[in-house]
Amino acid sequence: DAKTTQPNSMESNEEEPVHLPCNHSTISGTDYIHWYRQLPSQGPEYVIHGLTSNVNNRMASLAIAEDRKSSTLILHRATLRDAAVYYCIRTTLNSGGSNYKLTFGKGTLLTVNP
Amino acid sequence: NAGVTQTPKFQVLKTGQSMTLQCAQDMNHEYMSWYRQDPGMGLRLIHYSVGAGITDQGEVPNGYNVSRSTTEDFPLRLLSAAPSQTSVYFCASSYLASGNQVDEQFFGPGTRLTVL
Image (cartoon, rainbow over all chains, first blue to last red; front, top):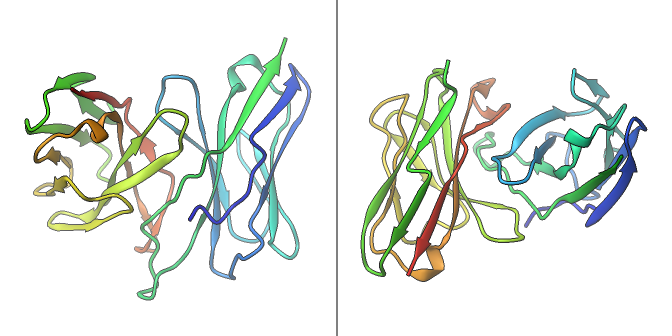
């Protein structure tokens, strides 16, 4: 139960911004949104995560909708190295108030055209 | 700082054989986890640990054992290998934010396992 919905694939052009959407309509108030990406033949790589407000780091920005039912990962200037599968993961606290399980779905395959 | 290391990189087993996949991290992370990734699929959590001596099951624990005797090491044991366990196995580690939330996970390079 990945609990998020992402498009199977997206295309972008090099040096243009990329907006990767994620739907998590059943999210609760304590659920975080994490993004990872996986380059071909490599292990996943952390991108960003957030709870309510928008988050920025050196790799990307995460825009979370006001109702928190969707979010968007923003790559400001795509490069060929950004071609990867991007996973949007929603983490949920268990009855003990902890979250130790991240569930990866199939993600979005991002193709970057030169 | 080596991050998360996994050995071996590749392994071929016969059905019924047992083996241990090794995982180590040098970041003093409390949390460690094992995932498997089948072709064209996302990662599925096998087992995880939140500290030495503390382990728990993930989504697909059957056929696998883990132990955590030190903070650094988290080996994954296949008890009796089956063709259905052919997969790529990733180990990861993370701090626990506020003591109970998985933070940024660092992944190892993976072990590609084939069971004949």
